[in-house]
Length: 514
Image: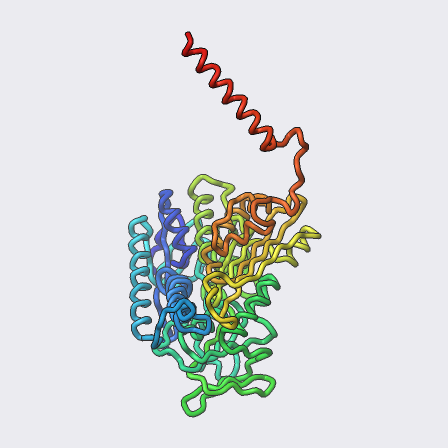
């Protein structure tokens, strides 16, 4: 066996969290080895490794947002809520050149892959492409070679769960979606989570006859405020893909070149060019042999960590989708990775990520933005809370017909006598971009009066969040100050001004006589 090579820290996974940790640690002078499988596939062609940059860059945030932008562009021009016609702009056609879109998207992603590699090299991170597994808590095996370090960071991310039914392999998962060579004319997306909602919206927006099939009566059942769920369900019903409720998949079968999704209640959804399974994700930890290091995992295979990303094994840590903190979000993985590097190598022994009040966006049609507590969660924590809600069509749709307007919905959840903002929930065009600034305000402890003290920007959607109390007042009924504390009334002010003016004139006249 080859001799063991030693580093200060070994990072397993070159996605958002692993890369952020590796670069920050190397910047502190640590000798870092980063191990990533690279863009690997199995014998059937299915992805087994996303590539440099991980899920976000290759099969997640980045390519998804490109597809979302394409769908939004077409939908804004030609969809059922298109604003172009209402504004008197004549457009025609609307065909999507899927091949060109895919080619340009993939080229953009490839550029990001190369940028990750360049940045690692620039930071002094040593990179090894291969499949890693634990020999013990301090030793990692990669392709027959051994590498040792006092610290090991597990940042291998996650992978899509499969549709575990007969014929489930005929469906493509949410990673395989980005390998589709053609825009399916008819497609079924299976799932009720945010990935399913996003992909169904993208396909519908690009012109597919899209169905969204889910087990219950609504989508986004977990973690979203009922106000958000009610609003997005209304928008999906009015303008989105076809909704198939209470749909529990039983089998996928191929019939005359088309796919049929059979449901447990006997219904058959037929004629699909593709079935996309978006039924959740699982951590990619199974092949790591975590048991050799004494690392405890939960029922889903996620590494159990404490507030400082420590696992049950001393010197082994986990960040991102591979750990059990419950936030499968790129910025969370990046922040956790950087804080961990600060703690281990940057001389900040108490550095850790605060997981409270993390904002998130769903790139649905229209988008959703949320930060803080849902109303039920706020009531469970604080007891009685105040709620402010508003629903209206934004000015972008002012000239559209009655059935072609998209709803904007805003909700504030306020706690305590000071009415501190503890939850903010947005649905509607621009919610994705609007949320960030308000998330900062919530994190800083903003109150309702803080929001309403800001002068509104008009005409915008965002102004609604600072005018719940009406224009120019910070309370529903602002009491008058005692008379002796008020500014002078206009008549008294006029008298004082006249007296001052007269005095000035008299002084000037006296000066001339002298």
